[in-house]
Length: 67
Image (cartoon, rainbow, N blue to C red; front, side):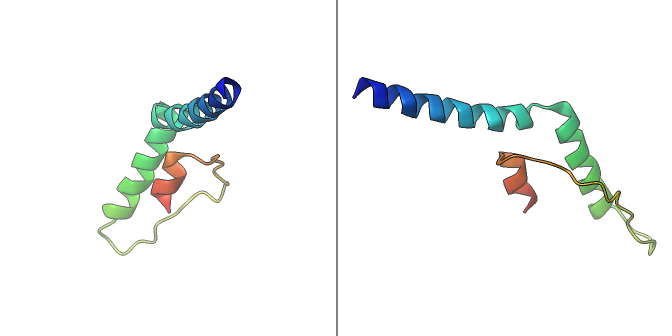
């Protein structure tokens, strides 16, 4: 019983670490704000240009927000 609770607690904290790592990572937050700014404030008719480099996320809250 105690061992299973410890394993569950470890799984929860590991998942939380993934969330917090991305939530409080200033580089990832800046990239998301910058892309949102480009999308919402492109008022002229010029096409929005994106860099075609893949952005890698693990299963984090930010990946959920971007869907």
